[in-house]
Amino acid sequence: MFTSSDNNNAFFLGIDGGGSKCKAIVVNANNEILGTGISGPGNPLHGFEQATNSITESAKLALADANLSKIKLNELTVGVGLAGVNLPILFKQMQAWQHPFKHMFLATDLLIACLGAHQGEDGAVIISGTGSCGFSYVDGNEFMIGAHGFPHGDKGSGAWFGLQAVKQVLLSFDGVIQPSIMNEVILAKLHCKNDTALVEAIAGKSATYYAQLANLVFDAAEQGDQIALAIVADGAEYINSIAGILWSKQPPRMSMMGGLTPRLLPWLDKSLQAKLSAPLHPPEFGSVLFARQALAKQQAIAASATLA
View 1 (cartoon, rainbow, N blue to C red):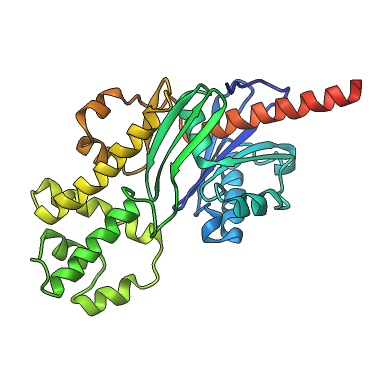
View 2 (cartoon, rainbow, N blue to C red; view 1 turned 135 degrees about the vertical axis):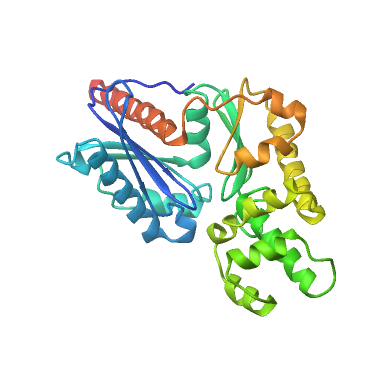
């Protein structure tokens, strides 16, 4: 079980870095949020320099928002939860970063999301934002499903929904399927007039780019568009499957989070909807809980070594 402790530190930083943005909070000894800062993408899979810049910038913005700009980063302990560091090579790269903080404790975005959602207690989370994945933390055991990255993974995510929509629009241009509501709205969104312009617009684009189209798919589905309905049903069924696997780990609570949650939740199995619990805190707060716990362990080890 993760618990928080004061550790005699006046302030802590908690950071949640994802594919679309990096969010930081600064809290006091009582875990009261004093300030918030948001910067660019924080997933090192899409660029180490971008991720580290976003972490630093979001931290500075949080301090400024809390009117604590006089406090230097090298005076603070920070918990950093990042997308992408479930890959060992990226975790090692981030651990080796010559960061500007007094202490930095690194975790996956999944762990800090789970800790935040359940206030440091055991539980599970389903995340559907730019990417998608499932995670449980039960009796000290971490379990992850998905999180393979876009475009080869992340089914049921905003990026996945956007990509499926574009594929269907292109198929309609080829005459393989009938055009749908999505043709007009996606072409308008991307300022394209035909299939050639659409291909040029999407070439080499990131998950964040495709995720901006996800709401259009749900809008079309809610209007009864059959192609959009099929896409939504496919994505929802994948999330249902993730939930089933997570429940087998027997977490006491499960929450769903991520920017796509409000749109996707109504399409999930009714039984799953009834069993989900609202997150108690956001992921960046989970980073604070993680940092406090990690610092307490570090201090305990140092104290033991001194006594020895």
